[in-house]
Image 1 (cartoon, rainbow, N blue to C red):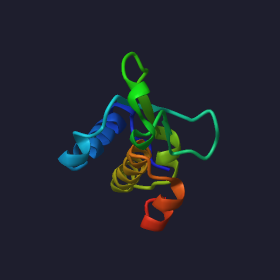
Image 2 (image 1 turned 90 degrees about the vertical axis):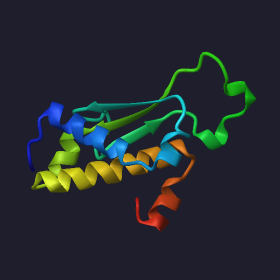
Image 3 (image 1 turned 30 degrees about the vertical axis):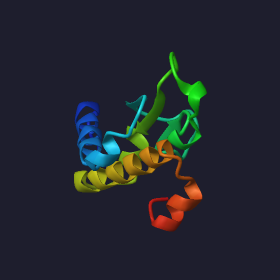
Image 4 (image 1 turned 30 degrees about the horizontal axis):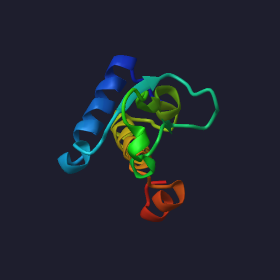
Amino acid sequence: MIHVPAERFEELVADALDAIPETFGRQMDNVWVTVEDVPDVGGLLGLYQGVPLTERDNGYAGMVMPDRITLYRIPICAHCRTEAQVVDLVRTTVIHEVAHHFGISDDRLDELGWG
C-alpha cells in the first residue's frame, strides 16, 4: 500500500476528471464528485449514486439533488504500490463511475474492460 495524502489524492481525481473528453464532460449534468477515505461497505473503490442520464425524463427538472460520485482514497491506495499505479486506478475508477452517470451497467463495463 502507498500513502497518498488527501489533498494530493483530490488533485489526482481532478486530473482524471479533466482528462474526460470534452464532448462527454459537457454532457455531465447535475453530478458532484467527492473523495472519502473509506466506504461504508467494504470492497468499493468508487460509488455512483443518482439517476443516470438515460433514465431522466421531463420529471427530472427543477430542484433535484445532484448525483454523487465518490472515490475512496484508502481502498484505492491499498491496491497500489506506487503513485503511478494510484493515478491509473483513480483514472479507471473515475471512468467507471462516470460511465454509470451515462447509464452504462457494470456488465457492459466488464465487457469493455472497465469493470
